[in-house]
Image 1: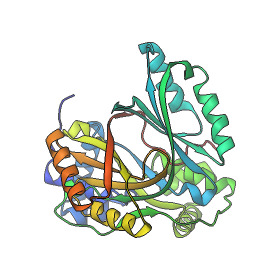
Image 2: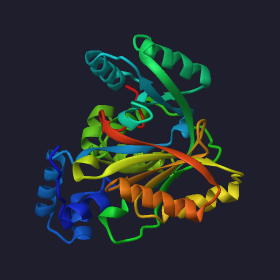
Image 3: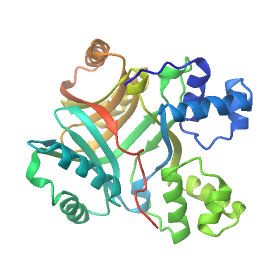
Length: 324
C-alpha cells in the first residue's frame, strides 16, 4: 500500500469534518482558511485516494432499543475463498454494522445489532451457520458506553468536544420515515436534504426538521468521517484493559487520562473479556509500547492488557445497518 502524505489543508478537512461531516463547504472553507474551490478539490482528492472511506452518522443504538454485540473471531484452516465469502456475507447482512479484519489474537471483528440476548443468539447462528466450523476462538462483548474523541494527530488544538453514549436511555419509537432517514445518513452522512427528501417523499424542510429532532433526542450523536489510517502510515490499535479494584470514580479518572493523550481516539466500556478498552492511532510499535508504559505508570490498577490491530474495514462503519 502506497503511503499518502497529507498537507495542512487535508488535515484541517479531516479534523473539522469529524463529528460534523454534514458541514457545508462554505463553513468548512472558513474554518480551513481556503476557498470553496480549493476545499472541494482537496475533499474529492481525499476520497479518491481512499483516505476518506465514507461519512456516517453515529447512531445511539440503545435509544432505539438495540445493543451492539462485538464478536471477535479466530479462524483455523479457513480456505481463502471461504474467507472472501465470509466478508461479503457480513457486508450484506442486515444486522451487521462492523465488519473488520484484524491482526493479533483474533482475525475478525463484527458488530451485530440485536434487541435482546436471544435475538443476538439467533442472528449470530444465522450469520455463522456456514462458517462456525472454522472458528477456533470466540469472544463476545456488549458495548454499554463509549466516548469518541476528535483525531488530535491532525491538529495542534486540544478539542474538548466528544461524542458520548452513556446512562440508562429512554427508548424512543421511530416511524418508517425516521428509520429511512437514519438508514440514509448512517451510510452517507453528507447526503443532501434534497436527496433525502426524494427518498422519503418529504419536503427538504420537513427532512431538516426530522433530523433536528433526531439530534435533539440524542438518537443521532454526530456525523463522523471514516478515515483510512493505514494508508497514512499509522497503526490503528484496540487495547483491552484488565483492571484491579476498578471503581466508578477510577473508571472516570482513567477515561479523562486517556482522553488527554494525543493518540487516543475512543474509550469504550463493555461487558465481557475486559474492564475497559480504548482505540489509538500510532506510528509504530515502539510508540505503542511507550504509550502503554505512560498509561500504566499513571494508572497502576491496570493488571494487564491485550491488543489487536485493525487491518481493514470492509465497507464503512454503519451505525444503523437496516434497510427500510
